[in-house]
Length: 385
Image 1: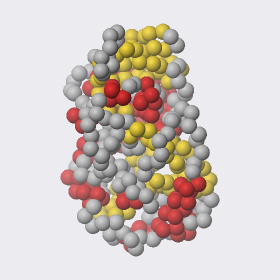
Image 2: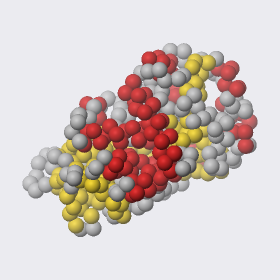
Image 3: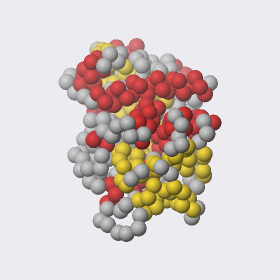
Image 4: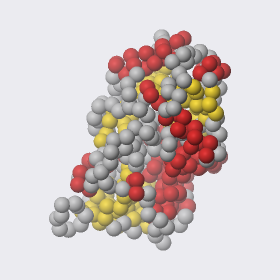
């Protein structure tokens, strides 16, 4: 039986552990805290699922596959993990990112529709769209209950035979020195070295602290602080009655109330550098002001809505927002750079990664450790409101 140690029980690590256990691998999943702990990027209350990715087909296809994976996962768990409320994209330019997304989705037969800005009034109880060129409507997009989904996936993994170990793990260097460190297919846990056929480091924002910069080759991985805000709103702003929304040019996104924590309205623009283990998780007042300014512009009746819930998350970012899927030594894999758009893909990504680890195919070159040019095309424009 093939063996694997997966380090990190966020949504990528738990999804991969579950997939491998169900396909015959002996799996150990190591997490220093608990799956779904609030330091994880995966432990945000919600995440969006959308297939629009500008002109990129690969991620659009993967997101569409992941949609089915999330629905099946919810059926197995006996609870709703994915609210298919739809998503409205607020397009400011007639030939911009949203129009490129529309072309790709149409070519892939993924449902979408271009709408006049005035039609936003049928989606939202209150809405202003006089600054928009058109709306892109994705009816099968929606909102994931992120923290709960991570906990459920971890529970299913354990039920499938995954051994969950609560401990801090460290990579094990091979003897000898070189400019680029070499590692054993092993993990140090509480002073004990444990070996496996494969070791996958799916540690999100903790990856840069575990491995030397030289390990990443020409792919820097930076960690940023991301403030998330939820506002108290009337019942008619709830999900799934109200769809999710995204404003690419403004790096703004949100959705209606899910589970009583309020309407999410927040920024996708990169925040300041952040240390995920010990950094304070207090949102900045400027972020609150920024969110209110967007509400005032797009949903005027909510401009004075009080903050009901706030949470500090983090992004692990590569310059081009492409992920890292790379073998850095025989049997030792790095999985990271979720870059703020990784959660939605997890069920489908786990299947893709299982094939990589089985040797069925090599990972996409885009995920390799090489120099990358800065790009915003997979997430948002990076502009402030």
